[in-house]
Length: 177
Image (cartoon, rainbow, N blue to C red; front, side, top):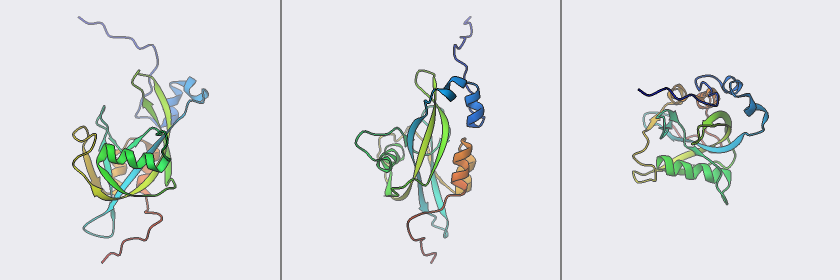
């Protein structure tokens, strides 16, 4: 019979808002250890009207709903890194807005079991190309959903708000003809 392994570090309850999660690991609050990530809000215009659909994908480890995101890349600007993540994780390319359209925070569980608070700057990607052949193909589920449905699926409270309130920026809205 196996004995349960005791954890040496307290682990946050990920269903709680970020501040409550951080309260479970207070040293993280004061260490200045926030890490930067870049994410993509990938959208397309819906076939059946003037609305948009947002791409959500599952994470590889826990299969929870997320958006494409990742760490900074040497020699790449933030919006370029977000676009690369969208391609590698979801097989989509398109027109990327160079300025962030929002930001959210979350706790990332690292490979060693530790947690790192992250700030994710989000870049809008108007998808013009979808491929079935991409780096993480077969490792994730991809779905195009309404902004409200995207918000229901993701866990992070700040990201939920950004998705519900998402409006296409920097380009003319499609003619609803």
